[in-house]
Amino acid sequence: MASTIRCKLITPEAALIDDEVNYASVPAWDGLIGMTHGGSALVAKLGMGQLRLDFPDTDGAKGGSRWYYIEEGFLKFADNELTMLANKAVPAENLIEADCEAEFKAAEARAIPHDAKDKLAEMDKITKARNAARTKLAMARQFKHKGI
Image 1 (cartoon, one colour):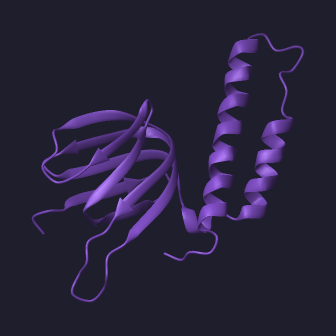
Image 2 (cartoon, helix red, strand yellow):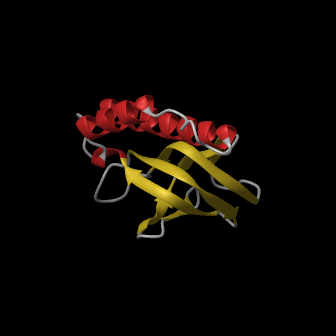
């Protein structure tokens, strides 16, 4: 299809997506990036957040959107092909609200150890864990009644 881009989402565990999409909203380390057909070449660092992929209508099915929680990695976009190498990626429908709530409570309860040599680095780890848990919980609540 002329107005689509090839999208690949790969983690160390699996290749999750290798399909045509109309649009991709990708969380980069410094904000969201929108990718469409004909876009300029780009290499960027992935951040943590919500990945949205919009699929085109096909002969047998109506297109739609699909969401993933992703964490860090890199992306390359060139010649209408988007390749994302993510450290972690979870389909939104696989996020279970109760598990995400428990992860969020545990992240909120974390504190800097008194004997930490680098308190700033420890606080960065805690902040990252809290932000990740908060994002996953929000996605679990948003998509708990939706299928793929």
